[in-house]
Length: 299
Ligand SMILES: NC(=O)C1=CN([C@@H]2O[C@H](COP(=O)(O)OP(=O)(O)OC[C@H]3O[C@@H](n4cnc5c(N)ncnc54)[C@H](O)[C@@H]3O)[C@@H](O)[C@H]2O)C=CC1
Ligand SMILES: O=C(CO)[C@H](O)[C@H](O)COP(=O)(O)O
Image (cartoon, rainbow, N blue to C red; front, side, top):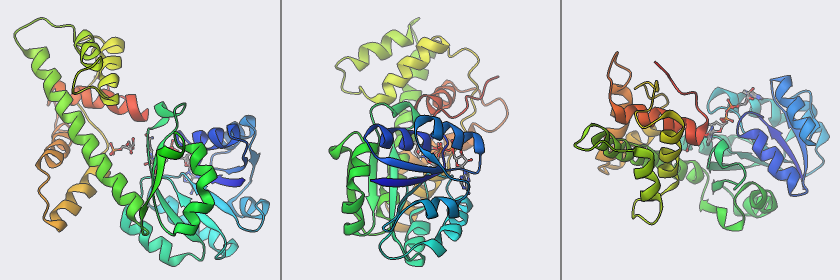
């Protein structure tokens, strides 16, 4: 299949490389010419603009957006819209708000798929987990690409109508916050508690058969191995927070109590006060690098 990819950062380059590796043809565009050159080196056809990318795709265009959520998605769709009709499919693989995705699906002539993407740059080799919302026929049409970008056929599914893919990803991120907070609190107690423990050894032991083993726990093990059992100069400042905020806002609207997710989000906000000093926050800061290659704040 021929696929246009717009947005060639940490995640978009992986979409390009996994599609090329699976035998698909890729046309690539980014505002940053260096990112386009990287995609071209990997085997993609470089495009000079969104319009150029659209021109290089035939009828029944298949386009994947991997730009930052918000204005960049709307700006890209504004440029794409004159080139799209009802036989085309656009996938937004970023972390857009589900209501914005439902609005965009209504507004564009193309079939619009909102695709929550999990696995982060660190999961590039394995492939991603993809949660997709939008028209069934468009999901079917894009399945060869989803097979390539995801871990395989079991790594993606259609969640339901427009918006549902990003809705599921939003809740996924809320769960991610609470899990990070739980590991952070446990390791903080072990770090400050009664025994002089090697936390890498604790994490490694837990990762081998314990009830609480997980990828995030493997990233805890990696963090202690690379930073030391006291996390070295990793600061107690946790960035990010938009998807967790949306999860809490939606839970309030639905009157569903989500105290763990709310608490994890407020811990992030609390970490931004000067000299907050908590170990759990320092581990959360380092884990965001582990799964998302987000910059580690250091003292
Ligand atoms: N990094 C991660 O772990 C994950 C990120 N996401 C989401 O995927 C999306 C992309 O994330 P990253 O690749 O990490 O971001 P990034 O910042 O590494 O890359 C974004 C790319 O989009 C380009 N760009 C920005 N505006 C553009 C425009 N109007 N037209 C063309 N190109 C444009 C930038 O030049 C940059 O190369 C975001 O929505 C993010 O929230 C989703 C899951 C995991
Ligand atoms: O979606 C993700 C992981 O699943 C991305 O890493 C996202 O950037 C996390 O951002 P935040 O910490 O602000 O929620």
